[in-house]
Amino acid sequence: MSFRDLRNFTEMMRALGYPRLISVENFRTPNFALVSEILVWLVKRHSCRHVILK
Image 1: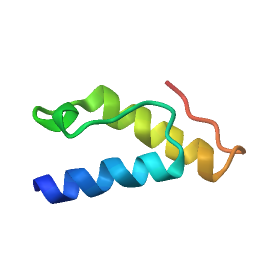
Image 2 (image 1 turned 90 degrees about the vertical axis):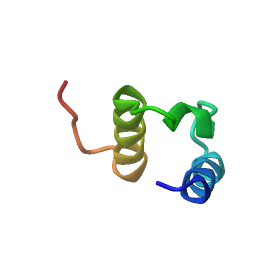
Image 3 (image 1 turned 90 degrees about the horizontal axis):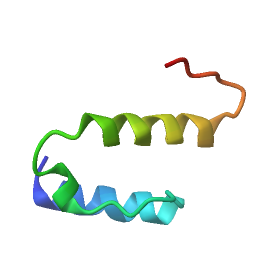
Image 4 (image 1 turned 45 degrees about the vertical axis):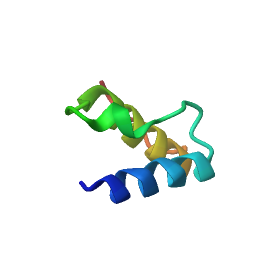
């Protein structure tokens, strides 16, 4: 992703109310833990009925 894409993504997550501060620096190297945390949060925000197994 480009710097612009990352900046837009972090701003969008802030606008959606993501509880943790995300910076562009978090994605300088692959951060699979953060990506999975974001995906789980988005699924739960979209539909509370879905169960996510670990």
